[in-house]
Amino acid sequence: MFSVKEVKPKLRIRGYRLFYADRKADRKADRDDSVIYGRLLRSERHGLSGKPDFIFNRGNKFIPVELKSGKLNGAGEPRPGDLMQLVSYFVIIQGEFGRKPRQGRLIYGDTMFIIKNRRKLRRRLFRTMSEMRRALESGGPAADAAREYHKCRYCNCRETVCIF
Image 1 (tube, rainbow, N blue to C red):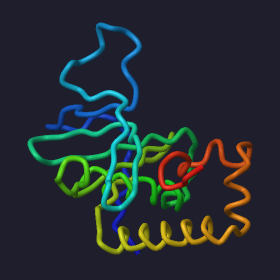
Image 2 (image 1 turned 120 degrees about the vertical axis):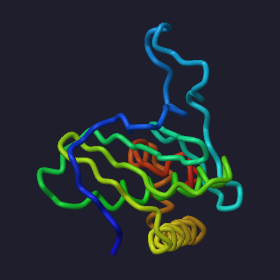
Image 3 (image 1 turned 90 degrees about the vertical axis):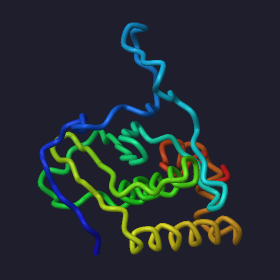
């Protein structure tokens, strides 16, 4: 269904520099003035916004990196919601910086996936977004759950594609 390469987890990418980080370094000495810290990134065209954990770049090439706290324990593929989150960052980066990332990385405690930015994945994201928006507009069960903070406070979509 999609192109995945499973490798040993690592945060550095040879030949690339840190371009964006969701949070500033804790110590002032570790901060880099050339890095964008914590800014909400947007794709106005697609109505998406978000904050990837990291973006690395080399010239005009961007690689989003998303860190996940759990382990997959040999599951062999990323969780569907995590995959869609990374694909949304492909779209957001293209909207924000005008360059389409070729790939991104999902890093779990025990596994790292290199995900290629494929048209099939972007179509799946747009279908999912349409379904979510229709559910919210229709006032169905998804809309009711979204209105309840305790049910959506940890959702990846909160304050991004979701209006709640």
